[in-house]
Amino acid sequence: MPEIIIPTATNTEEPSRVAPYTTPSLVYTTMLPMLQKMRDVYGGNKTMREAGKKYLPMLLKESEEAYKARLVALTIPNSLREAIRGYAGRIFAKPTTKGEDFDEAFNAWWEDIDRLGSKADVLFRRVVA
Image (cartoon, helix red, strand yellow):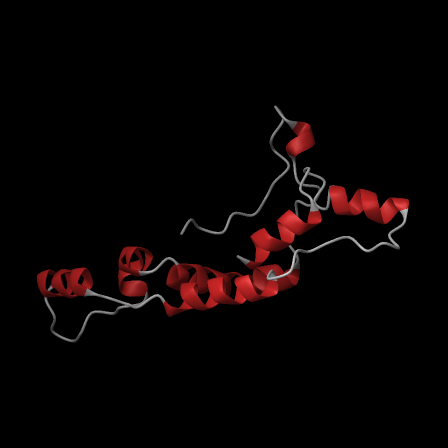
């Protein structure tokens, strides 16, 4: 999994594609270490191996060669990914739709929820999955 990227307003070539937010909230920055850990676990064996000593410390008196062999043999069932996909499937078993009582402003928000052209139902599915 890629590292968490905080959006910035530096894209001058396509200013309409720049996220309207550029400063992450305190809650987001506080949760970043946990979010990165979740993304690493979600990424499965590959990302866990790439993280190396971050999650699999060397044993006392273990040689570098023995550690690398243990790291290569590391197998972690990706239960987290399966659980999240199953959960997302349950949430979106019925299509997400706009309410019939939405006013014009709410309809506009639904059609462009992130001010980057994403419809709300598409964004919801992307966020959960």
